[in-house]
Image (cartoon, rainbow, N blue to C red; front, side, top):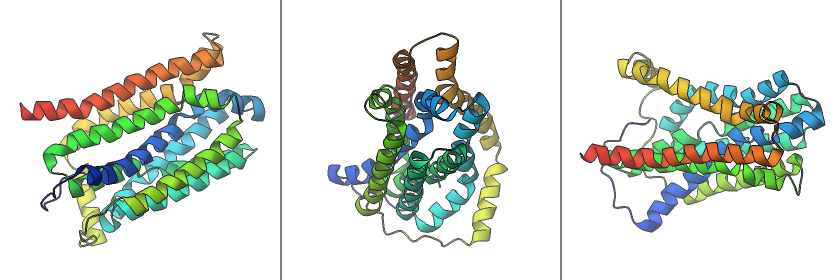
Length: 287
């Protein structure tokens, strides 16, 4: 799904570029906000529901487990039905998960909501990559992919100081209900604004798609890249997405506002790296 398609790329005007990029950038923005928000709301959850470290870790990992398990069927669905319908439908699932999370007062309800959020945003990045291959030539993809990754970095930034400020005027229940409405709005943005190209989907049979996926796992290139990506992402997300906040609170004895500032600094560094990655890759390719 990440390889460039063989059809000729059309002329991209500024309005068309906005219609292609903004819906998926918004989707990845909300995905990363949901991904990292537990780091800021964890003290509230611990205080209100009496969650211990094990329960808090389980709650946060529910998102990632549902997210990871759906990646394989996600690729098949994107190739068969296209990014517009798949992304919009999944974001509706994410919105329902955020609503359940916001209305819950038990660990079971929070787990169900968090898992649905993870499932619902599992396609935000891959759907964007798939959409870009439909519209842009191969040499433009590193930059476009880097820009949408940067949108996710903005989501991580929004999950720090802005969320901490919001919790001063409302509670986390209301916050998640508002996020559910926003997510539903982004689903509508993807479905009604993104101009999916008239490219036939589903020419390959399911068996052929499965064979193609197996070929990825048999690739030496994949295994040279995957371990490094796993090590980097798992370490960063476990620290920045959850455990940095309890450490700064319990060991460094920092106040909640100060913790949010440290998390903001970490998220900003990630945002800057993601923004530069596509630009630098494009520049190096030209050289």
